Image 1: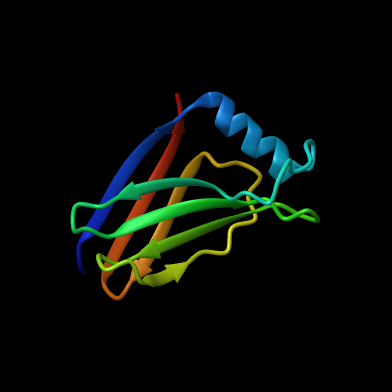
Image 2: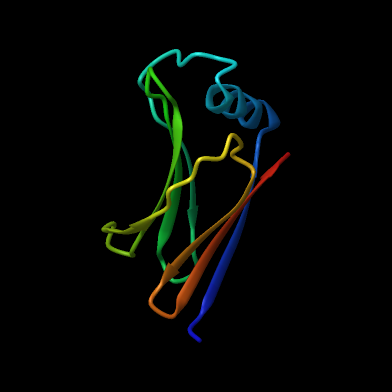
Length: 102
């Protein structure tokens, strides 16, 4: 077993609600702008939880980057909520992002 890296991120409740409304189809995207929540792990790696505002179907795009900014892996997430845990498994290491409403 490798190292488990864990980061918790508190996100404004209005932002969480906006994302939920987009993902559930209760709101339509106002632009093509990608909304992003970013966190940095203690080893210099970073995770972006992106909300892609596709006109047909907005979706979450969780992506893990190494310390040099190169994409290492991504997750397929069909959730209708930004809140929760995102787990990235890379070799023997585990990277966990926990998004919580403030």
